[in-house]
Length: 261
Ligand code: GLP
Image (tube, rainbow, N blue to C red):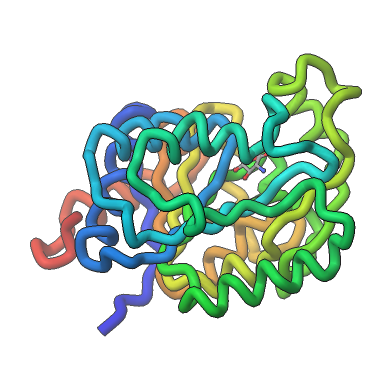
């Protein structure tokens, strides 16, 4: 029986939050060695990836689908998500090259590439667990505010804020591509489980709106309130604007044994 719930898990530090998220993934990989994992890039999952590498899990049958990629960047570009994923995770685990999927930023035909990506996800048996970060504006993947909540993998134009936020990976804002390919919100919602990790004070407002605000495309992460199995794992700083933080802590501390991680 699947438990239907949105769980808010607040942990004291980024390390504790990342370790907890890593344990959730480790459990999935042990229960289902041929799991299909949705992955996110960006600063947030760095510690999580480090923890996963340390755990020495068996990835030989695992398939992965990344959320997004910048249009126009080759896989070798230092700021591409291809390069990021290989450097920070894939090189250090025994995943098979052909089981890794990341949107192709150089594709000549974006619409048909996006359709194929959706088909590949479906043919793999669908994503068991989708890892998500959150943008300071509430985006998940690169689904910027006002994205359709039913959207599928497609081309998106980044907001000025996201280009500013990600300028650190490119050296300057002008170098940040204007367009990206991203899984849609509908694609993300099809995953059997979602695991959103948010770390740091700069995420606190977006997290509070996503968790305690209305479900709205103005904060795409808020759609997770409608997901059957969503876990929101936060450090204290990212949780600092939640009005019901004490309640979430209480629920987590008083979980019956059979529900524990
Ligand atoms: C990025 C990515 C997202 C990520 C989010 C937060 O631009 N496209 O998948 O979750 O925005 O990024 P970061 O973790 O670097 O703060």
